[in-house]
Length: 182
Image 1 (cartoon, one colour):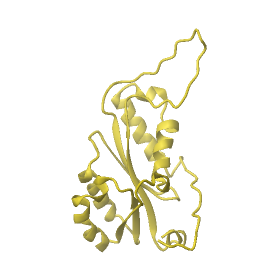
Image 2 (cartoon, rainbow, N blue to C red):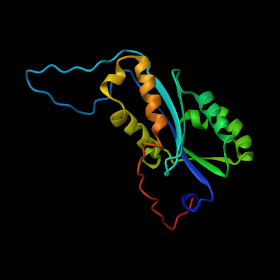
Image 3 (spheres, rainbow, N blue to C red):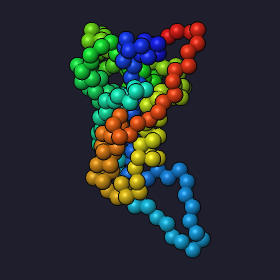
């Protein structure tokens, strides 16, 4: 698949979902002994994201205040399937919402439109480049003040996702080819 994607014969997207809670993600911090440091936060559900992206930073993004379930993923893939201009493969992990009955029921229709689903081996999130997007969004794309309220967070997440592929580019490493083909 990688060779077909590199040569432009197919589009290869990686898909995944992530939640951004109203409680900030702080990987580390420091302060002076006599200094009080706090970050605004609000208890609540936050915002959930579903995204498809390529190594060349093309993307398809959707957000929801509701939990992302199989119906949401199916709806997004359904919409995505109508936008295709060439054979497209979407790489997903083996989460139940990706492999369940609702997904299986739509695969034939999607294949008729040129959309094929490829499942990663179990326990291999390192093979899904969408994980990089979520990490960058949570740890680099959002500021402390973005967590002040649900409205602030929704706006900040939507803004950050809308810049992906435009002003925000992720430099993914190239494919490492071996004699094994998928």
